[in-house]
Length: 171
Image (cartoon, rainbow, N blue to C red):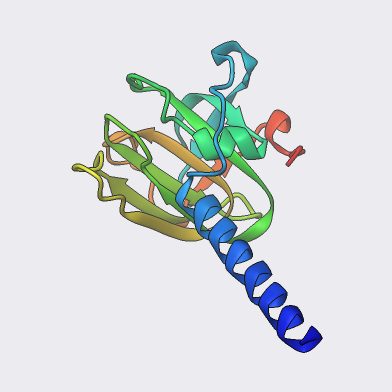
């Protein structure tokens, strides 16, 4: 009888645990209050081609906490050319981004620990409920208005100079 109760208890713990994982992954459990728009540190990011020639600068908000990275640009109505968001991760790894609740298109630029662009995605705003995943190897991810990378000539292999304010993450 005690073995049966133990098995039932263990099964219940597993079911509750799986339910919690699904809720967190889907965003149902982990909600984020919109950070104060003035609560972001701001910096200028400069991009260079493979030969070291300056291509462009962009003014960014720095998303250096879990809440800021989760929210991203979702609470932003529009993003003028020359502005963006720089996501800071604790280490270089493979990361995936979605366009959760986005109302405008983006270029998503993955930048490795050596400040080199590894991948660029031209991401349209989601159509309905569908959220496409955009992945790449990076320590930093730069999101700018769609077309910015084409306009500036930024390509994989080029360099993104990471400002000091984005070098120490507080994740």
